[in-house]
Image (cartoon, rainbow, N blue to C red; front, side, top):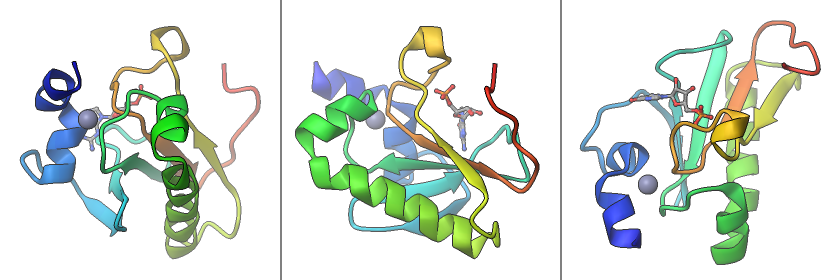
Length: 118
Ligand code: 5GP
Ligand code: ZN
C-alpha cells in the first residue's frame, strides 16, 4: 500500500532529510538534488515531495505538481548556466530503466546530448 511504499522509499527519505543529498532547489511541492552517479556535468533529479511511483500517477493525483516539476527543472537549468540546452526525462517502468519507484525528472546538461539515447 502507499504507507509501506513511502516507508521504504529512498526518495521519500531524501525529501524528509533522513537520507542526505545535495539539494539545489526546493519549492512547496518539489525537491531538486544532484544525482549520486551523474551522467552529465549537470545531472539533477527533480522529485515531487509526495510519493508517486511514476509521472502518470502524479498527473492523476496532483496535476499541478507536474508543471511544478518542469518549472523547477527549468529554474535549475538556468541557475546551472545551461543556456537553454538540456534534456528532461522520466524513465517509466523497469524496462525503460526506472530503478527508483518514486518518480523523478532527470535534468541533464552541460555536454552535447545525442538522440536517441539508446
Ligand atoms: P532511474 O534509473 O530510476 O531513472 O534513476 C534513478 C537515479 O537515481 C539514478 O540516476 C541514480 O544514480 C540515482 N540515485 C540512486 N540512488 C541515489 C541516492 O541515494 N542519492 C542520489 N542523489 N541519487 C541516487
Ligand atoms: Zn517516495
